[in-house]
Each structure stands twice: as C-alpha cells, then as structure tokens.
Image (cartoon, rainbow, N blue to C red; front, side, top):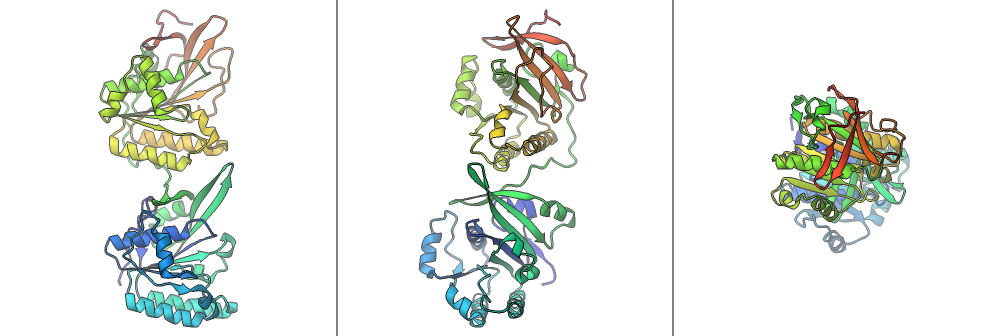
Length: 458
C-alpha cells in the first residue's frame, strides 16, 4: 500500500464534510450509550457490502448472531450480506488474550476491506493500565497488517478520550453526543482529529459541531451551509411584482439581493411575499416558499383568495413549498432541505414567511443570527433573490421599528399601519449597493394584491 485512497463511508452528509474516509486507517467512533454509534457502523458496513467491499462486523456482545440479526433487520438500510462474527462480552473481559487471538483468526479468515469492532472498550478490561496499553498496541499492529479501513466503536466520555490508548492509536476520532434542549434532544458529531484530510479543511472541520439524525432509514449528518466559491454576483435588476415599488430601488432589486419586509400583523407581509414569488413564477423563475406557521394547503388558499392559482406552478415543478412547525425543526436539517431543492431545481426566488417564528427553534439569538446570516450568504452566492418577513412591535411612525436581523439583510422595507389615519405606509430604510428613495409611501391591499399610491408622497 503506497498511498491513501478516499472511499465513501455510506453516511449521508458525512462524505460531503470529509470528502470520504481514508483507507487504510483506523477511526474511533466514540460516545456514551444511545447516541447511534452502532447504527452508524452498521450503515457504513451495509453500504460497503453493496459496493462490493468485503465487510466484517465483530460485535462484542452477550447476544447471539441470530438475535443481533433480528434486531438489525428492523433497520431499512441493513444489508445482510456482510460477515458477522460475535464475541462473547463476558469472555472478552475475563480472557482478553484469547479474545485477541480469536479476533486475529476471524480477520485472517475473512480478509475484510472494512472492519468494525463494536465496542472495543471492554477488551483488556481486567488488565492494569500498562498491560492494557500493551494489549491495544498488539491489536493495532494486527489491524495495520491488513491495510483496511477499521472502525473501533468506543463507549467513552469525551473527558476520557485524552487518556485512552485507543485514541492515541487512532488516525481519526469521531465523537457523538446527545444534548437535551428544551423539549427535544439534539445529536451532535465532532471530529476530534482526522489524519489524511486536506490540511486546508482540517481546522474548519475539527472546530465545528455537526447536527445528525437517527431513524430506521439510517444515520444522516447535516453539513453547514457554505456559499459557493469564486461565483460572480449577478447585479441585474429583478422586478418585485409590487406595482410602484421598483422605482424606489432604482428599477428593482439586484438579482442577489436579500430583502427583509417587516411590519406588525395585518400589514400584508404574507401577501407581499406571495406576490413577489408569483411574479417570478409568471416569468418562468422557479421558486421556494418557506413557511413556519401555515400549512401548504392554507398558503395555497390564501393565494387563491387573491386570485392567484399557485397549484399549477407546483404541478409544473416551478414552485416548491417547505412548511414546518418551528418547535419541531432542526435548523441544520431545515437548511439542508432548502439546499437540496436549490441545487436540483435552479431556484431563482425564495420567500421565507415569518422568520420570527424561528425563535421557537433557536431561542439563542446568536444561533438565530448565524442561521440567517449563513442562509443569506448561501443564497447570494447562488444569485437567488430572497425575501424574508418578520413581525415587529407597533411604532408611531415607519422607520422607528427595531430589527435585530436588519444588519444581515441587503435591503429592509418597513410596512406600517397608521391608526390615526387608517392608512398603510411603507418605507425603504436600507438598500445595500443601490440608491433608494427614503420617502414614505402609502400602499393599499386590494383584491389583486399590494399596490402603491403614486400620488401620495410624505
């Protein structure tokens, strides 16, 4: 074996982050009970077996091979074609040297390309520390001789990694955690170390946590949103679809623009966003509607009341709707779904309805700002025109509202209900890279949508 080679690990999202696993190498997958170490290992073995690799699973368990297969068969991804050779856990703890010989014989017999020992931490249980280190050095030499990709599953706390001899012998360490958060539990993956990957990516990968999910369909990791590199920003003008508004932005929004439309409930933010999206659809521009409050059916009914038939654009594959309860979404998973649509459907416009509801999913303000910031940067790098709406508290006059996310957006438009005059007004308070009219203009919500009164200038 002259050089390392990249091979897919079989975990959705993980190959995107790492670019594949390096072979030969030894990877420690560590964590406490219930974080998904075994499911992750079985999915990697199942995928390897489907791809023609010779895969071997050595569970250190009190269960029989038959019972383990019954448990594993409940997993949708499970492939029964890889080799499974259980070793009794009680015997492994009592007689580690015999176990070491047995492992060696199994490996020599199967000659695998990919191996999982799950868990490896009970091995050498009865040894004093010096003997345990000698035991694992011998195991490591045995594994190195085969030039294969090996995963050692470890039942370890993060604080135990530094003093563990297994950590020192591993080329990479993937640590899995379960963190209680409000009414749900989040699963996070960390790469404590990872030899062989691009040095330019190593610090970025090892300095962040990645959300992952576990289900019967498998183990999924969600990479963070990244803007495209070396992309040329399209500065052509995009019509908003709101009669009279484009003149306030020098003829329209720049193609890459992110526009925040803010106002109190009842100012027409949702109608504004639907009208913006519809204008693009009418011009054959694929779009996404993202809602955190209404169901797709309710959004379509609201549009229908305005005389807008969005169903036909869904049928034509131009409109895609993503509606989620903000109490139930995982931000990274939500962003991943949006990215998948964008990168397969040539999206030109996107409307986020009610981003203030994201506070239920991300009560930490810094985390919420990071989500919106990464989303707007990602959309800009794809030259997508985006419109976000958010609620504000009542103000005496448009422009006096306080908006935490305004600094992130390219443009900000405020909608205002005047109780004294029983009229509606809007004003542009920010438009990065574009001269904009700072005047306050009156608008009306008509049967066909929002329109500006051109004869009113304050």
